[in-house]
Amino acid sequence: MFKSATLPTMIGNVKTGIDKNRFAKFAAGLILPILGVIVFLLAWNLAAKNIDTSLGQFPGPAQVYEQAGSLYNEHVAQQEKADAFYERQEQRNAARLAQDPTYEPKIRAFTGAPTFFEQIWTSLYTVMVGFVIASIIAVPLGIVCGLSKSAYSAANPLIQLFKPVSPLAWLPLVTMVVSALYVSDDPMFSKSFVTSAVTVALCCLWPTLINTAVGVSSIDSDLINVSKVLRLNAITHVIKIVLPSSIPMIFTGLRLSLGIGWMVLIAAEMLAQNPGLGKFVWDEFQNGSSESLARIMVAVITIGLIGFVLDRIMLQIQRKVSWDKTAITR
Amino acid sequence: MSIKHHLELTQVGIDFPTPKGPFNALTDVNLKIDKGEFISLIGHSGCGKSTVLNIVAGLHQATYGGVLLDNKEVNEPGPERAVVFQNHSLLPWLTVYKNVELAVKQTNKSKSKKEIKEWVEHNLELVHMTHAVDKLPSEISGGMKQRVGIARALSMEPKILLMDEPFGALDALTRAHLQDSLMEIHAELGNSVIMITHDVDEAVLLSDRIVMMTNGPSATIGEILKVDLDRPRDRIALADNPQYNHYRHEVLRFLYEKQRKIEPVSPKKAEKKQSTKQENTTQDTKKGNNINAA
Image (cartoon, rainbow over all chains, first blue to last red; front, side):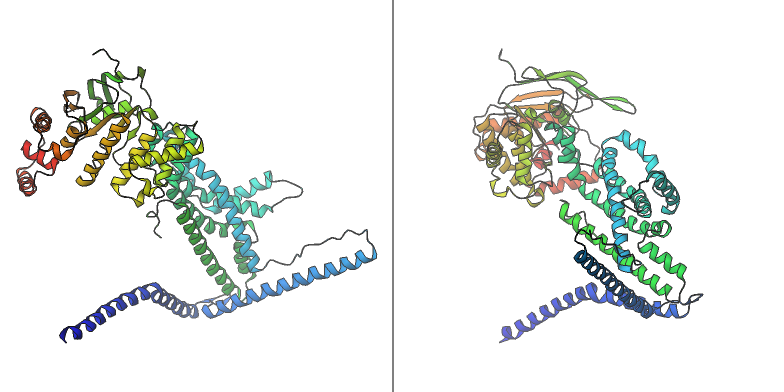
C-alpha cells in the first residue's frame, strides 16, 4: 500500500519537474521575444507621440502598419496597370496583325514608377552582385595571403588602410570611374546599378579577405605534413587540404561581408540613385509628405528583416557546407 | 655483417636557428636499419626523438650528415616513408574511406577505380576498421582514428613506416589492443618500422632493437638494445619472462640512472606524487617507471 501510494506521487513530481523545464524553455523561446517586441512597440508609441517634426508627428507603430498596407496596395494597383498595359498592346498587335500579316509585333515595356516591392528586388539583386564580386576577389586573395607570409605582409597595410573606409567616401570616386570606363551604346546595366554594386563590393571585401587569410594560415601543421608526405602539388594541396580546412572561417567572413554589404548598399543606392530601397528612403525624404516618415520606417523595418533573413540563409548554407559543426554558434 | 642496409643515418645532426644563434638539437646520430626491422626510439621529452623521425620523413632537413634509404638520399617527404602522426591527423571533412582513398589515389596513380577500392578496403581490413568506412573522424573514438591513420600510412605501401608516438594519446587498454594489431600487421607485411615511444613496455614488446637517446641539447644515440624475443610475442606470457624483464630493466636503467633528467620539483609536489603513485599498482607502466626512478 505504501509503495503504491508513493510511486504515482513521485512520478507526478517528476512530471511537474519536466513540465516546469519545458515551460521555461517555451518561455525563453517564444514568450520572452514576444514580450520584448511588445515592450519596444509600447515605448516607440509613447516616444513617437512626443516627437513633432516639420513633417508632422513621428509615426508610431499604427501609422507604420497602415503605410505598409498602402505600399502593398500601390504595388497591386501598379501591377494591374501593367497587366492592362500589356493586354492592350497585345490586342492592338493582334488587330494589326489581322490587317497586315507582314507586320512584326512590338512589345514596349511598362514604364511606370517602380513599386516598393520592385525596389526590394532591385536592392537584393544589387547586393548579391556586389557580394559575389567581392567574394570572387577576396577568397583567392585571402588564400594567397594565408599561404604566403610575404604576401600577407605586403597586403596587410593596404587591408588595414582600406577596411575602415566608409562607402560614402568611395561612392563619388566609383561614380566617376564608372562613368568614364563603363561606356556603351546599349548598356546591359544602368550606371547607378554598377556604381552601387561596385561600392558594395569595395566595402564587403575585407571581412572575407581577412577571415580567409586567417583560416588558411591556421591550418593544423599535421595536415600540412600529411600533404607533404603525400607529395600533393600546390593546386591539389589548396583544393584538398587548404580550402576544406578553412571553409568554416571563410564562411564566417562571407556572413560578415554580406551583412556589411547590405548595410552599405542602402547608403550607396541613396547617392547613386539606384532604384532600390536606398532610393526609396531618399525619395520619401525629399517628398516630405505627412506619410513620408511612416513609409521610411516601413523601409527601415524591411531592411532589417531582409538583413536578418540573408544572415540566416548564409548560416544554413554554412551548416550544409562546413564539416566543423562546432564552429557555428549564432 | 656485409649485407646492404635498408636505411642508413650517417653523422646526422641538426641546428635550429634561434635569436641567440643556432641551437644544436641533435648531433652524430648513426643508425643502420635492416629491411623488416622494428626499431623503437626512446628517451626523455625534448631529446630529439621526433626530430630524428622528421629528418627520416624529410619534414626536417639535417644540417650535418645525411639519410640514405635504399642508397638514395632523403631530402624531401614522400609516401615511401609514410608517417603515422601522434594525433592521427585525419582530414576531418573526409570519411574514413575517403581519407585512405586520398592517400591511395595520390601514391598510386596507375591503379584503376576498382583496384583503388579494393586496396582501400584491404588496408582498412588490416586495422579492423571496415565497419566504419562511412564515418567522419569526429564520429569515431581516438583508438579508431589512430587505426585509420595507420591504414592510411600502410596504404601508401611505404618502404619504411614512421610512427611518432602513435599510441601516446590513448588509454592503456586501447593502447594494448593497438599494439597487438600492429604486431600482427608487422608480421604480415614485414615493413620496416621506426616508432617513437615513451612507454618502456611498448618498446620492449614491439621492437627488434631499442634505440635509447641521450638528453638534449646535442642529443645523440646513447645505447642500442637488441631485443631477442621470439615472435609472435604475447604480452601475458612475457610478463613473467626473465629475459623480457631484463630488457625492461636495461631500458629503465638507461632512462632513469644514466640519463636521469634533473627536473626541479618542489618537495611538496614530489610528496604528493609519491602518495598517488602508491595507490596505483604497477599495472600502469608509466607510473611504475617513476617509482623505479624515485
